[in-house]
Length: 195
Image (tube, rainbow, N blue to C red; front, side):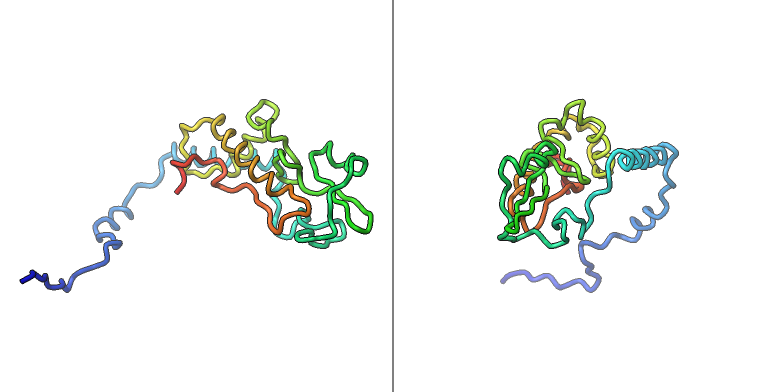
């Protein structure tokens, strides 16, 4: 003798919003001048990022290809250079690739460096005055609008430093890995900010 409730003919999925709520959302007032100014501030930060930093690497950029244009990933003919061969690359924080035909070239950043826009930045400099301008530009480019404004730039620099150590270790392998890791909108977020 269990009680069975008849199915209601007007049942709707739980995800549908009531009509009155949809109408209320449509009737919300336009953004205030303070909200517009905040949006303009975001645009100014993005413009500052463009002034300080080169554009991020695009697919097909030469970061994963040798001087002759050949893909470097999974290459068995690439090995690390010796001290003499690497003398031109290592001061820039870059790996030196030695090919079996004897030629050498500078490659990805060394472990312990953050690679961005064709430059290598020493991970331990992240959060210092030397890196402040680059950090401000990176935050302007990659920090999403929904990020918590109460999180300090120092904490965001710490998150970048941790991320850069892990990613730098992956990207610096010789021969190079089949794919490279890079910055994205999640890089600077705290766990509570992640969607």
